[in-house]
Length: 459
Image 1 (cartoon, one colour):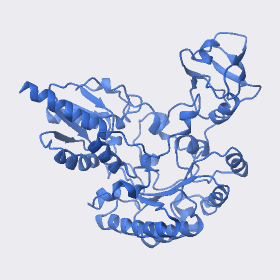
Image 2 (spheres, rainbow, N blue to C red; image 1 turned 90 degrees about the horizontal axis):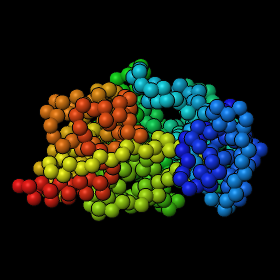
Image 3 (cartoon, rainbow, N blue to C red; image 1 turned 180 degrees about the horizontal axis):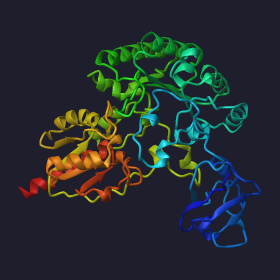
């Protein structure tokens, strides 16, 4: 077990005034060794916080007493969200994307977590196969809500087979307990063609309507298959299979509306792209509660682009936003410092295959067919991977070189995490200059409006 290490201190905060610094180790908080940032939040919420702090190079631990307003943050961030040990996943799902990663990537990308705390904090999906009675007691007692659960199928034998873990057959019992206690839970079903689709998917969704109707939402997402998969039974959906999934989910979603007053069941945007059909209208997504799972993201982007204003979605905001100390991981990590615009030239929009399908009609509607869309083929992962967020530096560099390398290339920040691509390099490491903008419809519209004004004034 390790104690939290301070990675950031806000200027003028109680932590700064007390003399806390980056690198300090919080050995004890109010006499307690905290297990995670959730407990850290509870321990530091009061008007007086007593700390035992270890500073590098000092042989003696410091004792500090900090007085502040009730609920006022200390004003610091620590290096991890979990201090005891992240609960790793002991399933061996043949569809797991982590098993399909190429070798040589940074170590943190190969970590498989199945930790309910990270589900609560960041919206990570957990199978509950490592969930215990003590975990359930804590979630219910502290009302750690929402929680995100990977369901995949409600057939016990099939679920155990898909997870390659006998506990997969029984771990959904915890879903019953959490829902009965009033915990908000969002579910996910990864559909693997020939495994849990068709009648199996229909049975799963009917079981959800019958046994787990208190679920806030369920996202049905397609299997992603990279060239590095070693599972011969895993393959991408065909067009007909994608259409069949949409038909099942929409039909039973309509039934949910009649029975429960909400749709509850949603297809990932990727299904509409695979099926060559349009995404449903915005009200269909009922607040975009799983937007970070790729559900309603296209429609949200479209609305932002058309209106020029950011959409206030009801998606999981991340508990860390109200927890003083939690590091912003995953979707909520800082993407990159945005580049200064080069307004004197027409932009070339660099995107993935799926992104191009979204952008093309929007540009046409906006009367900007003069703006080029440059599609990056994902050779790093290969397979059916076409989402913009998985573009890598190597693939982008190759694409820009093939294009000539002398245009005003505009890159969405969704493919960056703290300025770094999945394959390791930072934006500054690219030999060809790119302009990075926020991945939103508002940012794209602003870019196009500014470029039209400036390029027009030069002509």
